[in-house]
Length: 120
Image 1 (cartoon, rainbow, N blue to C red):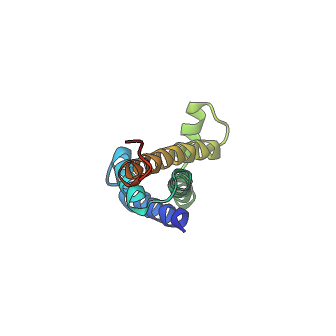
Image 2: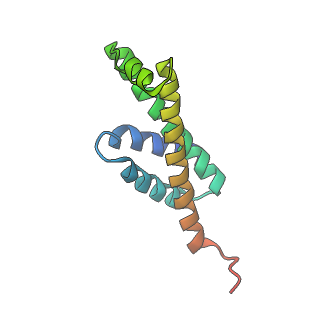
């Protein structure tokens, strides 16, 4: 359940706030959300990472299809890729890592204060 909650929160955050704030602002928000939701670190990493990756793949794909622009093809050619979908997959992989590391960090920050198995 916490996986799904973090996936939805990170997706909505990336979709609504992505055009307004830089990626590090999204990282802070997702990290805070992961700290509030809790769960284990792997669930937080995968949930937020998947949510962010889906948006970072779907939005450029939707814009490319809707506008029919040749810009994605030209940018991918400049970067040395034959297909613009490879560029979108690379972008979504970066989004996955950004969302996942943010949630992992937020969840780890929560564990500092809620872990009762401290050695002292």
